[in-house]
Image (cartoon, rainbow, N blue to C red; front, side, top):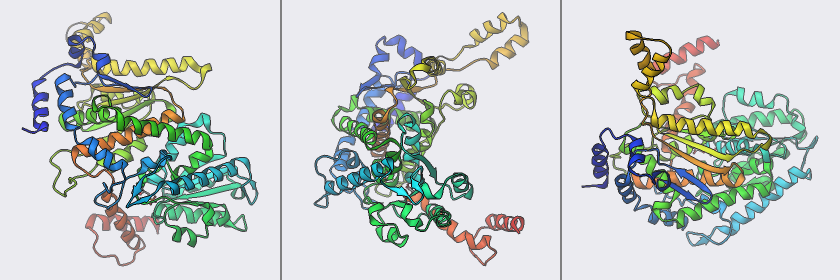
Length: 533
Ligand code: F6P
């Protein structure tokens, strides 16, 4: 019998078990089903994982250490692209790591130093635009070349003391038009962030930015920098090599914010704070490598995810940061988790027998409470919730806000677990003076089934270091889930087909002959042509 079927049997044997009953049976549960490490606390006690499930889940994690060490050692674990996976080296700049017998660390250190020098020069004005000191920086990139630095720049707003930083990603002209409005091209630096330097959205936006700049300054490319491995293409754009920061193919797009793709963040918060962000990531790497599986934060988070999705069959997972500055974290995690583990075949090409990764979504609390929490509490689908909460806010003078924020977060996880019974709802209606059939009808609408699982990640305070810890925690969680499911978390072939078809569709929209499209697409294209003519 496989561990998976034992897990399924175990789940069935739980029957109508209520999470609350687990606390009644084990007074130490709140502590023993919490993992504390590196100043973080992951409370997973409000889930239906009991001691038996925990044991089986830990058995599932057995292959993680070997694969993990292969990753850190620079082996080509991204087998479908025949690449090593070494984004961890970007935040552990000491020591040496060999890829194909070559130590890659000296080059990483050199690039990091160049990034720091460039960021400092922009921040202190020694690198200026053609109209004076740089006031604004625009990062043009998409996916992994946008979401990481955009999320982190917002998260670390209190440390943002450099020029204003803007992010343009969408090929929709509205994105760049709205961003350029009000900016002075003569004091703006444009960073084109694209590993391949071919991504159509990024190249289209970069061209528009170059044209915009060319109208105002004599040497537009002199105010461009590039974050890319494709130095031949950056040279075609006229971007001087001193402003090109490259990285190798073993840094995947969605794992790249620790290196050159993080330049906009480094300019915003300064190299010292950026290094604290790296240090937080490096601390999580050490923890992931050294902590036993049963006390290992990324492993436990992965196992909780697997319990909910692959064992209990819950289709989605909500990430709910009770921290407004983490507003973009759910979007960042959508790419990290869904591009990594949204696969249908196993590493060996066989069909995946288990469901792959879940749909990940979310919004910051408390705003979500006034939007979609209704479904989470009373809808028919069970949505495991992952709350993220800082014990301290950044504004001591607004401590009362933070207390309310914390109270809301804890209240939600408690309400999700406990719910409200029919009897309690009846008592409420009685107190309002209702009787008979109307009391029954109204009471039923006020029942909360409860027994809805959640985890809470408690951090001391959101700062560069803890943000680094959080991001690396989720990266390793995705990795561990991928290993357990037997999939390659580091390729993304699923985004290719749409890209190819988009290129082929342009002629159809222009009314040129473009055979081979389906009738619905042709019909829509014809309607759009009419509407645009
Ligand atoms: O969406 C696919 C993808 O390849 C992502 O993985 C990547 O982050 C993004 O496109 C951007 O790619 P590039 O940095 O090459 O422009």
